[in-house]
Length: 108
Length: 151
Image (cartoon, rainbow over all chains, first blue to last red):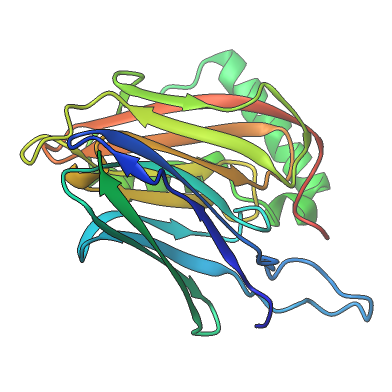
């Protein structure tokens, strides 16, 4: 799908050992597959089914999403920062597309 | 199973209602289906109510399309004692599964927030599993003014 833009809020820097909060949002209709269109037929399901967050290649957090998650899924979680590095976020769509974004964090 | 008179009465009223509203009821998940999923998730263990797990939801959700939900588990989150996963169920939705959060010691804290859809007024259940095999459960009722599953 077009025009899908992930947005992520990560602090620019943190002290080593800090637990930071990460907020993520992606615009996506999260079509549940239960709604009917104008022609009376069901609209096929299309949702983000998995979200993952990695820090320097190591898994930090992941989430399996079901159709019961609202449109434009918002996920907030925390991460422990021990060194400077890069957070990599990815969202997996039902149609096989992967939306990715990266954020760097520095140590104070 | 020994049924008391009151339980019998409830069961028969429920059965009659199910007969009348059979079609509409079959479209939504039942608390039994949720209990089954919890059993599978917990690996046969009986989840301890409350404990270190806190599920936060609004008491009244005006719009069932976006209901904020928050889970947090008090845990040291070290390499040998951390929360592996937290799962959220909505008992009255067409499909009770909402989300599964997978944590690692790198998460620092077992906390997550998201927004979910609720079809009607119902119980929301969260179950947490730690690396030591403990299972916690928390349950909240959310009153929904406008349901959020289309239809």
